Length: 133
Ligand SMILES: [Zn+2]
Ligand SMILES: [Zn+2]
Image (tube, rainbow, N blue to C red):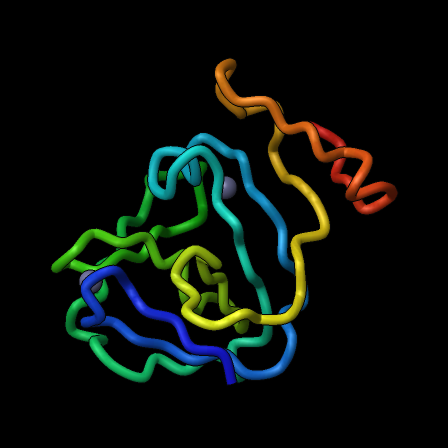
């Protein structure tokens, strides 16, 4: 069981099992909501449990054609990912308190990264590297 929380601790969650994917997303939405990029965990919704603070979870839902909502704590503003959507959890790894024991395997949406940041770990990711779109 891996625990996570927002900065102020009002929102707490737990993840069990292994995520289906763990990757870095460089899209403009993740950049603006989470920082330079987002470290994103995706797994089966059944393995995610919101343990505390549901009343503090707010969601920014973008207008079409964008599809991914951004959940955050209404007390401290911490980005939490999308949380549960469509049978999966999408969680910001930055909110984890414990080591999940798995590591990111690639980058998504590299074409949206800012000019002042350069990803330089392509060799490390090898064949798992995700081609820029
Ligand atoms: Zn908070
Ligand atoms: Zn993104």
